[in-house]
Length: 114
Image 1 (cartoon, rainbow, N blue to C red):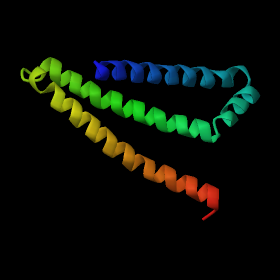
Image 2 (cartoon, helix red, strand yellow):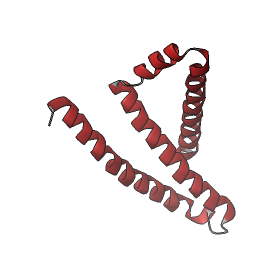
Image 3 (cartoon, one colour):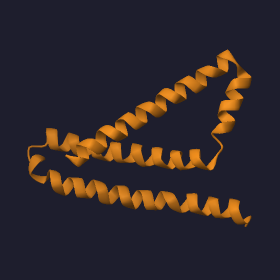
């Protein structure tokens, strides 16, 4: 059940990002100055953290989507769905830990100027 909830939450998160992306990009046609102001607000540490969360959401949604496809279309899928879920979580954790390394390195360079 929790994988179902996480799949729906990540899907809504991705949809929200795409909606905001389309709206802020369309703003350039209305007022280039307003567009520049909006894009400038994206260059904050909070938005950087949100971008990392977006990567986490897209990655989990994609991996879990492959698991859902396997459960639905593979005759032995329902039997192995729990093992596949733990595999998805494991792969997701490894990839997210690998993705945070450059983020932390960049943050350290920004903070300490090395």
